[in-house]
Length: 268
Length: 318
Image (cartoon, rainbow over all chains, first blue to last red; front, side):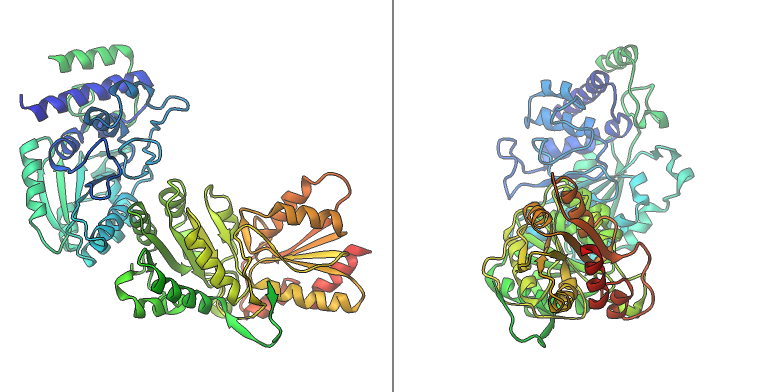
């Protein structure tokens, strides 16, 4: 197992442990995005956990703001705050709310949670980078259900219009949203064609393949004068067999028995 | 504060906004301006023409505009977003709340065509809800300037004021009330005129109607205090409490629904005043969508003409 794979493994265990302690949270879409966020935070992004507000840092906007089990586990493992603090997730008066608050969570670049808003914010960060002559990248992770929000497409237009080649967006294409499969609730396909027609550079990859994610980011960086979107095919609940591809684990707690089962499975 | 002597002088508040932006453009590179395809109407086009590299037209996409402004603000810039009031507070109200106000980002929202100022365009473009909506959003500062100079002061003070600020401006010409406002301060009401019998509290361009009504009342021997409540939040409770104790009645005037705006804020404050205090009469748009008429005629029809205000005041003082 490579170091990054090991880190993904650790983060998945953090997610399950934190979910179990909190008694609430969004495991499905957290587990599906582990490789994407790990590849970014542990390999690609120019960041320093000791200087989380460095103006030259790369940014990460979690547009699917409910995936905090994943974000907080990644930030903690990356050194922004102690891993033990994950046990305060969604606890009364803690600084780790169910959706990230940039003024509370160390390392969180934006307050998110209301779907559809992250891409426009990323555009603003990218415009600022170009204005201020800073060469950072802005990564934004969107959900696939979130693609149904009209504001995503307003921002898609703006990103292409302003040639924001410093925006690299991901769609966590796990195929499920709260009320069921995306294609049943409100069909998104052909999703890649939609993005292409909006003027974006589009790649479609396996979102659990770290090498594929890495290569896609490198390819996105080589594209000039247009923003990039990487549609990452993933499995909701990835890594915990009884959660995989199960709609109900979008936002559902687990029993202590289920937690033990999941941990045992991951310990292998 | 000095009052303008020339009572015939009129200038629109949106023209004041355009002039304030030109001053800011010359003073700083941190201020950037965003508009949603209404730059001719909001007059941000003048800034865009002079400082094209500091202006972003976001197209007819107010939600994207607010989100983009939030992102710019996280990087230390001071974005100012402009569109019509109704679109800013309703179409993109949630983006303002969640992506700007909640993280307390330094975004200024300056809107025009508030209230009924767009006249016969009809109620789709009126905005009688913004003060109530913006006032209910934590971290938001809410300002409604009354004239040209006060608008210039408000825009510049807002840029110097940390955190999100909402400023509502009108469309048409408004009487110039002030020739000097050195002591302008966000959150501090201006006593335009002192008086002891009744207090007229107005916000935005309704100041002109309060002044006209006070002229009639003074002619009848009624001493009128006029308070220019340019900031709706943070609210100047002190000036209202003082008026409630020192005068027998308060009439509020606003180009806004009678629910949730200036009148509500005044009534909430007066309700908490102990002992003998003034009665409060709220004038504004009586919870209806405005009809098809000029703004001036609509204000008259909602009893904000000088004669009606005068009669209401005399009745309250009986």
